Amino acid sequence: MRKYNRKILTALVMAYKKGLINIKPLQRWISIKQNLYHIVKYLIYIALFVLVILLIEFNLLPDLQLDKYIYLGKIFISRARIIKGIVYGFIGLNLYQLGKYVTQVYYVRWAMKYYDMNANNIEILNRVTFKITV
Image (cartoon, rainbow, N blue to C red; front, side, top):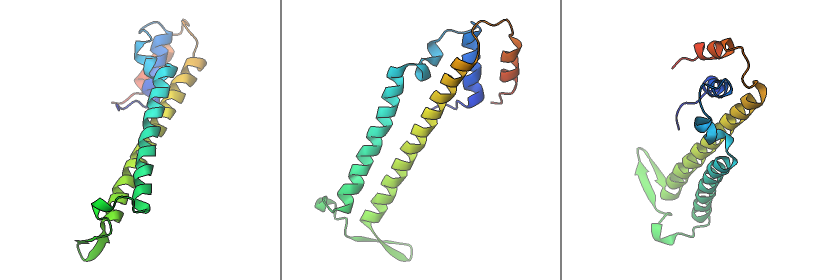
């Protein structure tokens, strides 16, 4: 996902409201179909990783030999703990991406509601875009 912070998203909305760009770049955050697609995608990933955690926890994968231990440095660690740690990392990553996308949708919808369409004051766009540092 590209770096879209609040200033860049607000500048995109204001450029659309002033008539400088069309709505195509904003469809990712405005379209309900796109919103549902992204939210459901991340929730399905989270559900799949939770299912893997449950399969490991109840030892329903006997072919992987998760009860064996691996020597790592000076300690023995079971394979199940290593795999569960990796899966928890993926769950955390998907939660972070979901939260980031939802906040971007909130920023765009808030800006669409807050800023006026076709106002004569174009200086407000200059003030927002001047603060953007890439």
